[in-house]
Image (cartoon, rainbow, N blue to C red; front, side, top):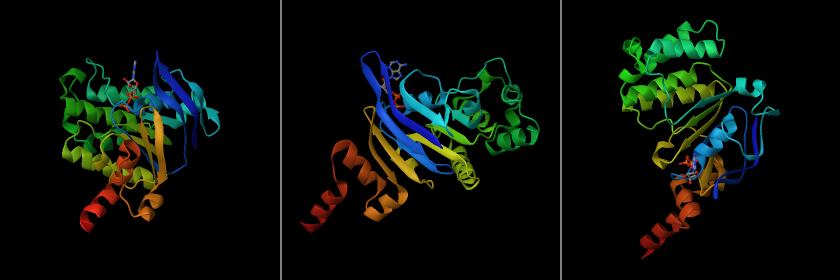
Length: 244
Ligand code: ADP
């Protein structure tokens, strides 16, 4: 279980995350939804231990920055940071060594095949197109197969095949009992099987709802999103329109 408690992150006077608290239950998929600048990346980078912040973040009861917690946490950043002079294969080897993985070759092959990088194994980081870099970024993040995975805007820059493959992969990870947090600013991309959605805006959590709560309300996630971020109740607007 991952617990974020009262996390506040300031950049100078700008409060990027304002007293944010939520929990990721084991084996659940949580979507972190919010417009650009809402604070999604900031909270994810705080969880992974890249930023200093006020508040507390624990992973299975351990401080997120501890060595034990880091072994459980995986992170797929929004922006790939590849090494221009390493090949695709060398990038994968690098991660395998960094995480002290054993028997990882089959997993490397599986990931490179699924994300269509199989024939790009000898290409250097700076020879890859933007989309290929995104796909390698995904493969690198998925290789260690961590228990909790944080994906920051993972669908950005991917082609339709990779989007489909990633959604399938996410569903497989969900069925395998992984805990996932997936950030996005695109409501339409939230068509995967999610358990909970947290809506953020201006550094604050505006809603934290389970799928059954949304389904039971008779409204769509989109209705809820606009209601909490813009104060617009879209369902009542359309109902009023229909009655006229
Ligand atoms: P999101 O991921 O939802 O688009 P971010 O977490 O990237 O939002 O940004 C939240 C706020 O923090 C924004 O106002 C952004 O401008 C600011 N911010 C993010 N990173 C930095 C930084 N390194 N320095 C200063 N301000 C930042």
